[in-house]
Length: 193
Image (tube, rainbow, N blue to C red; front, side, top):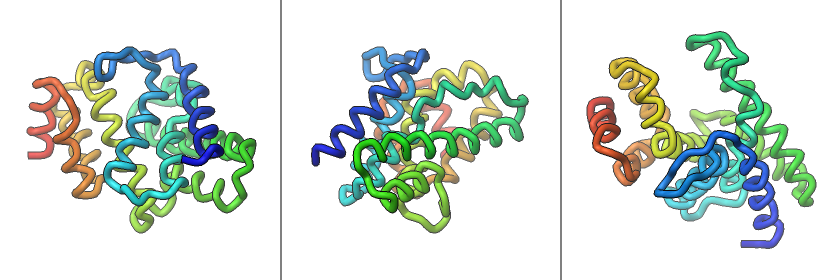
């Protein structure tokens, strides 16, 4: 790992350490945005051992300071959720661009990381798909149990099916390696079985 990359991911992690939402992951209480980035980067490296630095930076920053734009500022329902999600991706991309420029990354590299964070050309860009897979896997580990308390089972199963449809076969297969409680495993079996 080169020094610039190490400094950039340390800055991303430091920014995400401010997330007031703290959760327990693998026995340790951590800020949600920070662990989401860490896990996503781990999944990219696991599923794509040859992933370049732009993929790893984008995975680490895909939820950069996410809490600063609360979901509650948007209308309820699917349309509000999708608008919030699009706005978040644009914001994360802008924020990571600013951060990376401070570490001397060139414009083409910054633009590539931003495109990956936004998931531009998801259907045809393997890098964007890698970030999507990693984000979905991080969501399952970090947020599935909480979301399960807020949605009725049928709705949650539908959400999980839609999540799996966004993933590659390798990404979806990796769900089996996530440490989950029996209740979450049961939900996933119903959704993906």
